[in-house]
Amino acid sequence: MKNRTTKKESKYLTESKFQVFENKFQVFEKNFEKHMANIAKSFSRIDEKFDKIDQRLVQHEKAFALVLKQMQTFTKEAREHRQTMSSLMRTDIGQEKAIEDLQIRVDRLEMQIK
Image (cartoon, rainbow, N blue to C red):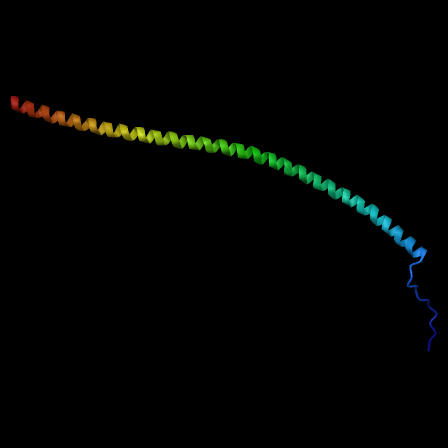
């Protein structure tokens, strides 16, 4: 049997172990704070970009509303134009029939006179 000469590490927290832990924790805390500051800056830049996108979207919404109004106006004008043309066509057709009827009457009267 071999004699073990290695010493087991103590289960208990000693002041030197605690000091090592505390140093590591302080380094971690400093790095953590730096990284959190960088993340916060990144989020603020992203937030600014979102604000710019929101402003553009508002401008686009206004432009789309204007285009929609113009389209509605054009549609209304086209409808009115079609109605006007339809009534003119009916009037024109009616006048042509009246002229044809008058022409036929004139032809009959001319035949009776001859």
